[in-house]
Image 1 (cartoon, rainbow, N blue to C red):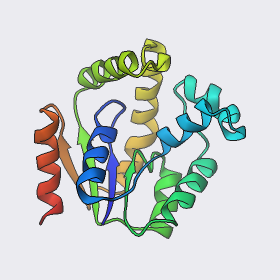
Image 2: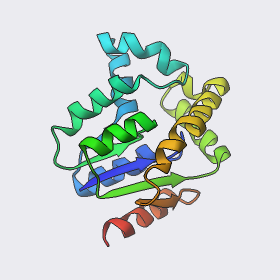
Image 3: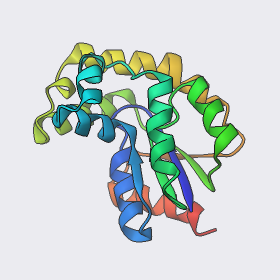
Length: 178
C-alpha cells in the first residue's frame, strides 16, 4: 500500500502517518523528520539545510526528491508525509511513482497554528514557537503546496481534521478499507 498525506503545517500529517505505520506495518517517510535528523546529527546535509529549515523555508526540490527517492526505492509500501510540496516535486513523483491513496488533511489555520505551538513546547522545537516562522510556513503552503495538491484533485480524498485524532484516523481508514 502506498499512501500520500498532504496538508498544511500542523494539521496532523505526522500523527496520522505514525498510526498508519503502526497498524499496517508500512514505512513512514517524512522529509521533514529526515531533515531534522540530519540537523540534529550535524551531518554535512544537516549543516547545509539548518538555516533553511529554521527560517520556515523548504529545502530545494532536487535535494528533497533525492532524499525521497533514496527512501522509496527501498520500500514496496510507504506513507509519504508532506511530500510532494511543490509542483516540481508533484510532477517528479507522478513520473516515477504512484500511490494507492492520496489524502488532503484539512483544518483551520488557527487549529494548525495552535498544534504547531503545542508541538514546539512538547518537542522543544524553537522554530515551532516563532510566529514569523509559522507564518512563513503558511505563506509557502498557500503559494507553493496548494498548486501542487491541485494537480492531484481528481484522486485525492479530503479528510477534515478538526476532530479527535482517533476520529480522523477512522475516516482515513474508511477509504483504505474500501
